[in-house]
Image 1 (cartoon, helix red, strand yellow):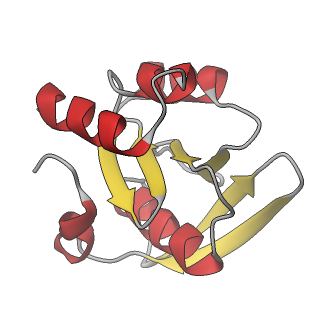
Image 2: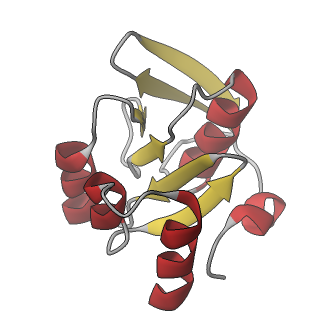
Amino acid sequence: QFAVRIHDYLSNYEVEDYSALKLLTLGRHYRIDNAKVVVGRNEFENNLLTKICKQQDILVNPLGVMGPTAVIHCKEMVDKQTIDLVGQIVASYSDCDDDNCTLTVDSLTESYTIEVTRVDRDSFSKYMLVK
């Protein structure tokens, strides 16, 4: 599993991108277009992801329920479709009571909430680096 993460890192980042390197040891890893997405598996990882998040990164968290933190690490702007997909990934691992889940999206320039529909995890498994 770790070899797949290292290969992804070497294929997509400059060696000096230490924030991306730190992400390798944490969470579930997804590659969505040009964005690396890391989703925490527990409270410890969620806290670490929040701490090592860089200015260009985007944090996605469930609002009002237990669930994972996701970091979107990308060199370029991330479109709404990618943020919504990451939201669905976060919602699928969260404790939302129904099929809809409210999430916070935080970046350097803005903070807002989105509403996503929880989907089956198989629908985004093609983006997961290690299955």
